[in-house]
Image (cartoon, rainbow, N blue to C red):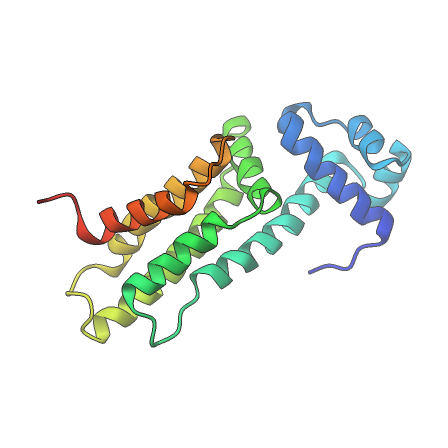
Length: 195
């Protein structure tokens, strides 16, 4: 990750907060400067323009988030399937609001600039890649029947990642039943719905 001066880091963090609150279209260098407590000229001196600042900010936070996702979805050769899914699920469930901010910004980016899906593509690509790697390994070990590991990865990604993260992002009322939700979710994932 790039090394930034404390002023640059302050500006980057302020930019991210403004992007969260305002979205891309309404984020201005004036608002960012006020949020960071710096002069607007400092932004232009250090980052040249708003577009460059926004790109640097997205890259900065994306790298942090991708490292966390790599950790959540990494596996040991001895991990059983249920154990692996439970670890993924709980890892996602335990992401902080700060961690989830990059998802919110990525969704804003897609909404505001539909042709630009870079952030969300990198996030989903990282997760699907790790899941596919895990499933290929499990198929080779004979723990999962011969199926297309990419299809299985996409299916599990859509079920697990999207339900957990979208629930956390849009449901502001987290309750103590969160752990029970996880247990119920994983029970349905493992055992299906047939009687």
